[in-house]
Image (cartoon, rainbow, N blue to C red; front, side, top):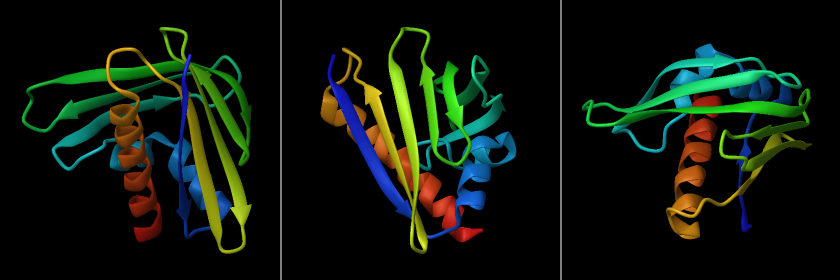
Length: 136
């Protein structure tokens, strides 16, 4: 199975990046790819065997879905690994580098959309996270 990696650099400290990535009150502010979408609710239990569920919806109500998974491994301020219901795995690494934090996500590709479409979508959400974390 193909694995895809996206990454960004956030001009912030690790404590803030970790909090904004893991706390539902922040997840709802960045977890969508475009301004036409939103994340009206988020539940998150970032620990081994903990679960998450993030609702993603088009603002016009035309479509929506729950993005869910179970955590395999969580090392605070370093690594989050989870599995989606279809068995695909995601690894997110947080690396402190000077005045920034590098967030790198590697995920198993799915067979419906092209790798480039998947890369673009995941990168857009990551850039939305960066924008949110740097603006607060």
